[in-house]
Length: 249
Image (cartoon, rainbow, N blue to C red; front, side, top):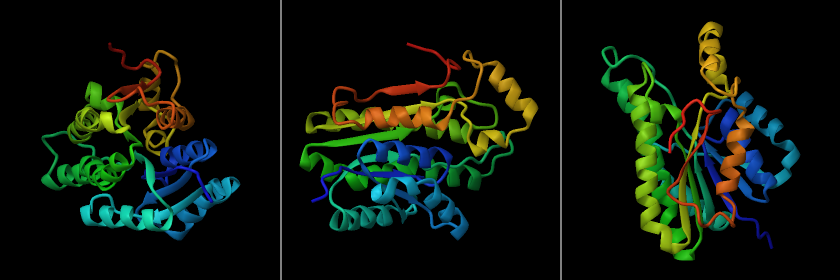
């Protein structure tokens, strides 16, 4: 009998998502990377990056913007694999532009993925978690949800909203053995950040007290910690992993 806890990572294919999958698998979880159906070469790349983990990581298609699809996904996964004990909401997009130039589509597309997607995924698993008396939910926010960022009113609003959602849900399920926390990454060595012009990226790094970009594994390590069975006394927290870029109480 396979007694590994089942973990679902939305946005599981990609620099940060894949690293989270790897860390959870190494922590003894059976991980399902839930992401949009993607090109065969990208799936092949994901398979190659996780090949050393054997059957501990697999892929399943999911559109987090579709409420019914999330419900069906969770029900189907529980029938085929078992109870979903861990959910990491890492799916996200950007649609950067100043508010004066932002159109309704850019606002709504981002909100559907970054904020509605968190609701849809959490709603699909939280009832089962509370019924069983155990669950770990980790939502990926952002330092820019704390500080704001030029050209990111939509992104900053969604990422700030994620933690408001996290705190409220944490209160609802705390006595049921379910914890809900947020992780707020700073600027990390991901494809999105590395696509920024060198001069701009150098300006960003100059503002980070540790003097470098973060590594995806540093975010993933924090997610794995919050997902641990022994992390049951941490809930409603926003854990910053930003190299000191933003500090607060």
